[in-house]
Image (cartoon, rainbow over all chains, first blue to last red; front, side, top):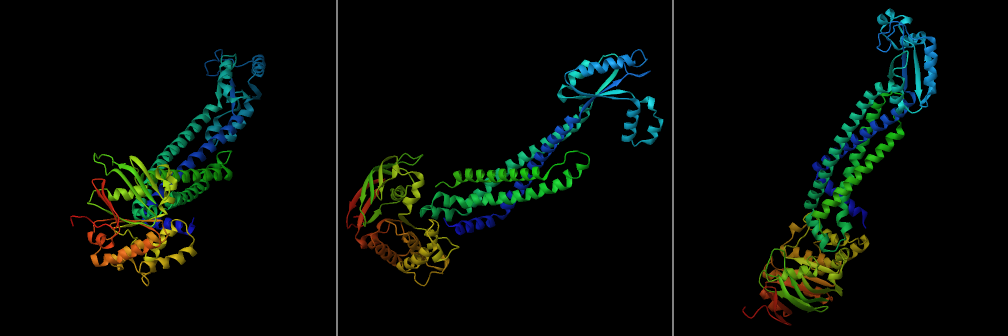
Length: 299
Length: 229
């Protein structure tokens, strides 16, 4: 096996089909970058999901005097006995891990901490804030059962599952991820066809050489390797460009939203995704070349 | 060296066989002309020797190997022992004489030192000394065919197949080509040459196998092209 002979053949082939080679490189780069971004969103979402599911709690709001909520029919608010009884009921439930009572003063303070609308805040008085039990569940998926059981208990005005608030956000991320992945799939498909076409053109351009190679008894590997390597090199260059795009998107997009979200996307994950997409790119190039050669370069 | 036993070849979508129950024996070191009109099966015969085609029935042995038992990945090794020359030369236009000949050795992975040694020798053998760095389009037809012969012979094949090597060359130049083929034959290489050229066949006085409609109609040693001529 003479390496420099093979590589000079590869170089000739790449140069002769420069436009097709560039098309392959660009398609592979964009396809792999989108695939990588899809995977990055996926890992971001799953790390955030596991972070949030530790924190998610149910807020069980209690009736106050003149509470407008339907369950608080008697307009008198919850009594101390009812409060104690309710706490006992919640604590007795097997799904519940921890219960914290939040009185009006704490609720008011928390509200002011999170509220920037001063005009609105100035109207609000401590007595306006409802008391609540903050219920932490061992398994966040049990929230529906707990909610159902606590609804209708005496003195409970309404129950808010924080998870529902997060679900719409996660749903958005999920859609984004699937969009990136489906575009990536289309690009990978296009790349496969393009590589096949490039290899076919290349084989046609060099039919004189390959004809002579066949005649003088060059082995199949010797005849086909330059074509396969052409595809692989184009794929690798595309993969490197995709890696650059992924690193850029990590720096520009994922790092900029890091301030709002607790779990940042680590460089380890990004490196893993980059090597994964590169491997996929190269494997696709090899497969497309081989399948094309099987049809157009029979030995 | 080449042994055809009752070989029949029918191409797909054709009713008439290209070769019809052909049996032929060519010994080591022989020089054989394969003559006959166009479409008589000469080229099919050569393609079968190279295992570019498979016979529908019958057995072919080349260089001691039964071609029907030769697996596909061993076909290249068979072809390394067979040199080929064609009417249209089939040189690479972007390589000079030396590179064209060296290409045949490069693609079968021969070391560069070996190539540097044998290529000039064979260029001299075909009578092209001093023209190693010419490009094919700077050479006459006869000279281009000599390059093709050098390429076919550079790996010292046991068999040389020539498919109408003088078809594109004027009669005076053809004599030079035949001298080179004769020289190659004298090194012990079996030469099998398909041709239309009656004058050459008559002048060489070698074995003649005549094909007509895929059948052997004549096989004579020291023959001429045909009684009719």
